[in-house]
Length: 626
Image 1 (cartoon, rainbow, N blue to C red):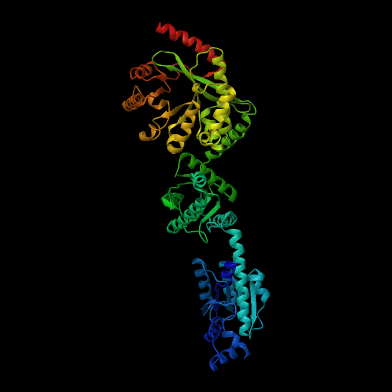
Image 2 (cartoon, rainbow, N blue to C red):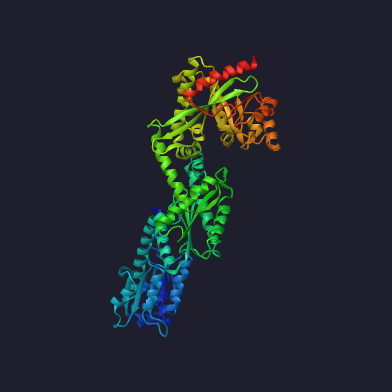
């Protein structure tokens, strides 16, 4: 209720245009809150001139019982009135009511001014004041729509009538403004919302089409906002969004020299952590990149929220009218698509839309839709790649690798569908299927007497942070009957370092279950060795990129040797991935690398080929060491 009262007590901003200084003085007496006793002769003479000598003027000068105030501005001609309205709009402080004298010689009349003002401000209420009987309201209304925002005062009139009309129209304008604020502006940031943005975008494109202009649409999404929101709470998330909106607005003000802003600013919040920026009348497409870089720099600065210092970066997609979209829907869709590609490459990057993105996006959508059905259709299978002890030549384990044979798409490479499964969240149920299937198969082989010390299963980031992860591992081991020590979970280095302390808790829980843990793709991330030594892990896997460069690159040889030596000092096993040549295996063996896997041993094998291979390979290994 107090907010409503405060709103009702705001001054009503009024503009009065009249060429007669005496009339302007009379208006000043009406709209100024001056507490006086009975007026003097001069004021009575002014009243007689303008209002035909009506009595009761004491109420004209007394303060309103509601405490209402007017903020009145006065101009001497029609052109000055139009300029005042334009300046008020540009300063974000528009007028509520405009009083225009019909005749203001020698310049344009009030009807002309009303038409010009209506083009500038569709919301202001306009009052035409005239003493002439030849004025036809219908003619003026046709030039200054809509009819319900155009009013007439026939002279002579009473001061109380003027004041009450201004009061009523001012409060109506404020009520309409509140409704517009709620309907068209985001309540959290104060930026235009989706509804208003789409309307403005449509108007901007129509003008650009008519005048052959180029328009740039920037689509922004905040990187890792969901993680911050979930971790620190929605209150912190809201403060972050407000800060980002303020920075964005301030940044665009500094870009005025590059691109003139659309009316009332160019930024909007579509919802969640999605923002848009509309750049109209740009001269060259490259100017959008200049603005995008400024936005990236401004929004990526650290901010303190409560007791937390956070850094959030945006990803930005850019689409240009008319080349990237000739209407609102296509331009917005393509800017959004460009943002998605920027986010995949990023973070903190911008990307122009390219036609090939539509083909890629359609392929991705098709794959995601097919992935959602793949489990129920039983389209997944596991292949197993053997791991070999470099010293004894015996099989030390196998790694379970996912393969997808789609009923509709055929064989889909893992490098294509695994990222989509992770981004869509489908990797969690798929990952549980992999875990269960691998454990069941390992149990089956061991029950048949197959020598299989270990089976390795990859764990995605979404699985690892899922609150059911540990219980899922425990349940699968219990239900399949596989000994926990046979299962090794491979977790990427970057995942562990993203939240080393949280990861340590999960790894400790896994160790209590008896499960082994390997760091996959070691050397490709940015591990802190001080943190690494505190993690309860069992194995480091040297990434294939270093192994493939062993023979040609001294740096790769140095890195591989350092990883092997470090692992030895920490009593960790080492597995080299991607070994394809005997010379690579010899180098690793000479450096005392414990294990390897790669095409030199075997490609990943379908389940029915694993057992024969293991039996045959063991025979070769035994005979070689006999």
